[in-house]
Length: 295
Image 1 (cartoon, rainbow, N blue to C red):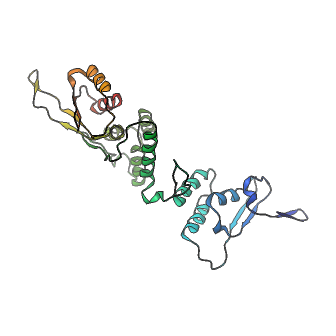
Image 2 (cartoon, helix red, strand yellow):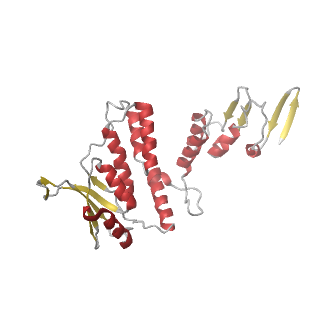
Image 3 (cartoon, rainbow, N blue to C red):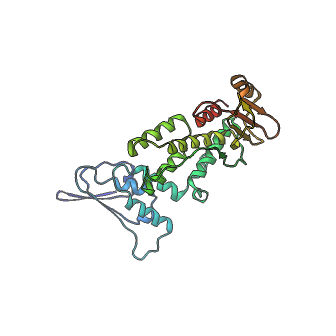
């Protein structure tokens, strides 16, 4: 590290040690040589050494003339150029996650090819691994639960007209896992787009049902007709829950369900167990969520 004095101007020539937190508020220019050789987090820290006061600052990321950059290096330089606003650290971290891969969160590998399977699937695999280590029943061969319930569930075009905003909300709704998540989605929809149509409410509820179903190793939820009558009137449809062979059902839990719901619930054991549930009231989806939460 060298420090050259020239009147009131200072020139500091240094290694990357300065990324460790040196704070010189008056510095307004940094030249980073061979920037293509640094990691994204390093570049972000180095860039942060300038512009630490009210002075306009400049960061020049330089590489050798006519050098052929690797694809990874280009992605890093493009990211550091793209994310320049305040609070961009999280975006930088996410982009670094995409470029390097997340590695093995439960082991020693620090990078990996996460993007080969996709970020969301990777997170699901990690979640399953954590749950298995905590002693929960996890079915490694599970398929996404099929839900066949009579209910209109979508975001109407008249409610959210912009396609990008609609896709953004679909993605957020797909992540619903609890009543708290439901409330957050509903609050955001009301704040941004006004009163929520019933179709969008149903979509949020079904997303919650899907999460609970997959956690319980349910392969299919379907609404079935009942040919019997009650007081001369046709009985309401029943909800049929089909479980995979490997599931978290226990005799004690099923006995508690039978005691609470009585004749409204029928439980069939065996290799491929299922539960048939007679719902009551006006909110079918809420009743399904309540039942799955109790299981």
